[in-house]
Length: 406
Image (cartoon, rainbow, N blue to C red; front, side, top):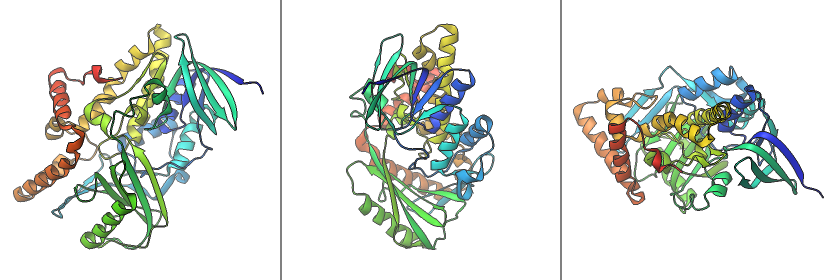
């Protein structure tokens, strides 16, 4: 059986939101673009679905009004509520009002379809070779190998990116990984406001703990370093919510879980590719503070597409262009973890500083103490000094150093 060969201008690996945004830019410019997706579309996606205001604006401006069939119920989210061990809770509305609650299985399919890209689903990326003139990619579909020849390749295939692994085999071994799991449970009683995404800064619950309503069920989610026990961690959170917040739920009828790379965006250790291969979205390390990765995936994906167009128009190396243009998204994302930006600016899309200012002096001290105790559980990853060093450089130079990027 002969190997199938396909020639395109750009090959995108991953029919994600990042891939859709890149494809939209490139297809609109008249390039021939193919997106590979290893699963059959529409495919499930582990995600809360709570979209940020910035991500919402991007989708509407670039893809059009969001249809009802790509939304969960409740169809929107008003904001975020922070909960602390002291039982102080701080609700914060999103800037500009409520945002959509996306059903990722259908919203991603809607976006990739609207982009106009040709999609090859059920197709698994295997390896690549960059000659300098073009990139040869091997993939497999239904047991048959396909070779793609592209001028450029974009890796938009998520945190466990096969494209990143092909370029930098040791990169994913060098960063800490977290297991994130969410269970779906029918609601018996839930005093938590259904219009908000709820997050707990509690060291006894896990590194990332959240809950919100979806389709008449309550999602209870927890994140912890890879190697832990999801059911034990989830049981601990469920017990806490029952005892402290009066949340009563039926046993879980579904579980979703995945691995996440929280670290790169905190310490400015992004990976953007090499030669004619660009890495974007969460594969590159973009992740907002509340683990909402959709908005930075969309924007970084669009920047990857724009970088290819500018490189072609100006006959410049695409990596050089991409690293210039992506610096704005690095600044926006990493600022969310920057202590000085949090204290003196407003890097988030829900105004914590304003709501914190409404607390009494005693409550402020209590919240700060709770935050410090929560951050201690991240000490083994040795991020503190790196965050402070990057904060100092950002303050002096006005940007984060690109020398830390791959």
